[in-house]
Image 1: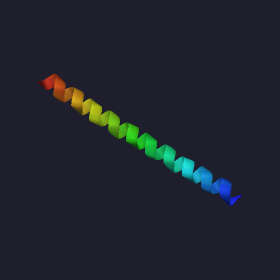
Image 2: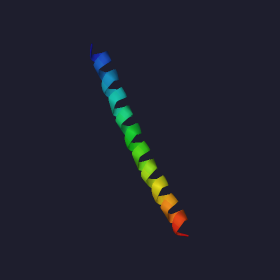
Image 3: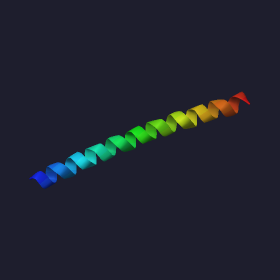
Length: 39
């Protein structure tokens, strides 16, 4: 029981970290595109 719980918590945290990383990546790419447009 605790093993399943730990696994689900781990998966949930990993999923959230990945989503956060994707959002940050999107922001960086968006800023980069704006800078390239400016020049």
